[in-house]
Length: 248
Ligand code: BTN
Image (cartoon, rainbow, N blue to C red; front, side, top):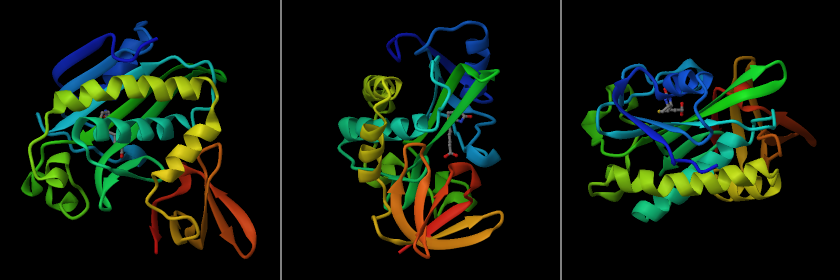
């Protein structure tokens, strides 16, 4: 399997993830990429929307047909791949925020939305959705995002060729997907931790539906959970239960 051997490019669509799911249900091969110039209903994690203006971002979804059912480390491997592709295409050293944010100076550059479709306990397919802000300037972002979002153009102070980022992305994504398929979890987690913005041993405040939790950050486990030490005990927090994280 090679990611990017088949690429379907659309001028517009509601969400490349939804389109990729439809193509996967219709039998499209593993590694097929769905790209769009704009999304009218781009989706983020936790039911949020993903601002997807025409021509200003990379909106891609990749169809995967993994044999393993535990997808938890897949978006983390994809995050590492995105950083490598950004570095290769532009020289920028972006970073990661747990679980799936790509950031530059604490502002969000991109994100990953990994969705699996299951048949019983087996995965029929997974769709790895990647959104990267490429060409936006400050006023291109809606007011609500202006203080928290950034783009490669803003980070680098120059225009960025989206095609160069895409070209760099498929092979590194393929390599990290293969690492994941082969079950090399330690390699994924160690690389991921090394690119996380939270320093080991930082005091962390985690906001959840059930209330705020404070503790010391102790790394990421092999199921993508955040390890927090509190009162001498280890607490494992899964991405789904976290609303926001602050640290110092
Ligand atoms: C996040 O909330 O950080 C994840 C954002 C993921 C956005 C991408 S853009 C391509 C794909 N299609 C979608 O509707 N969402 C993902």
